[in-house]
Image 1 (tube, helix red, strand yellow):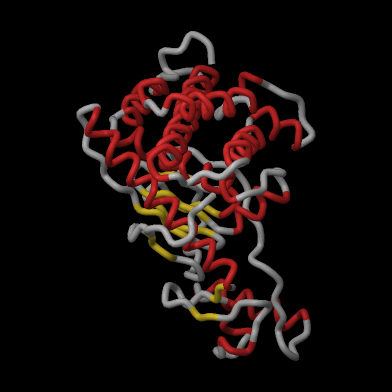
Image 2 (tube, rainbow, N blue to C red):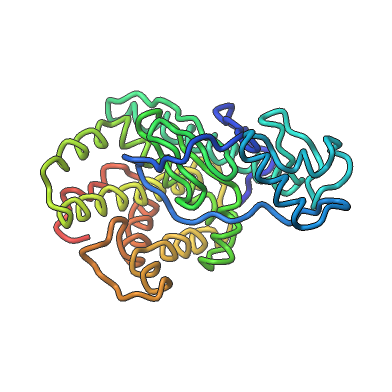
Length: 310
C-alpha cells in the first residue's frame, strides 16, 4: 500500500498509556474484529518479579502507566524498546508504533476523502468520525471495553476505537499479515460510521426490539457484511482516484475478511460451526461482500438488507 507521505487525518485521539478506569464492558458496539495482545516485553531494572508485580498493581490502582514506574520516570533508559514519552497519557511508544499511528492517520484521512465525496452524491453529508488509539482498555460512549474485544465502533459517540497491538494479533493469530489487511480493519469500522450517518444504525437498533436472538443475530450479520462492502467501496476509490493500492493488497484484505469470519473463529476456538450464532458472517460471505464493494465502487451495491442471499 502506497501510504507514506500522504495526508494524515487530524481526527486522531491518542489515549495510549492512560488509566483503564472502570471495568464495564460495552453495549451497543457497532462491530468488533476480536482479540488484543500485550505491548512488548518489559524489564524492571534490579527489581525481582515480586517487586514488578507490586508496581504493576500500584500503577493499575492509580491509573498510571506502569512503565513510568519501572523506568524511574526517565524515558531514555530504554524500557523494553519504548523510547519516547508521548504527550497523550505519558505512554512510551516504539518507533514501530509511531509508524503504525501515522499509517492509521493516513488510512483514516483517505476514508474521509472517499466518504466526503460519495455521501453528497446520494443526498447526505458526511460527518468525519474520530479514531481513538488506546492501550489495554478504553471508556467509550457505549461503555468500557478492553482490548480483548478488538477494534470497534461506538455509534453513541461516533468514534472508532483501536488498540494498535491488534495488528500484531491479526498477523500472528489470524494469519492475515500486510498493511492493507490493517487498512481493511479501519475501513470496516469506518463503514459502521457511514451506517450511522445514513441512519441505518438507528433503523437496525429499532428493528431489533422484540426480535428473537437468532433473528437479531441474522440482522447483525447483514449489518457487518454491509460494513465489509463499504470497506470495499473505499478500496476501489482509493485505488481508482488516488493510486493507493499495490499488487497483492486486495488479496491481503480478502485474507483478513476471511480470517475474522464467524465460522473461521468458531473452528479456531475448537468448537463446532453454528450458523445461527453468527453475528458477522462466514469467511466466504465477508470476503465476497468486500469484493462486491471493491469491484463496483458504488455504495448502492452494498444493500445487504435487501439481498435474498448473502
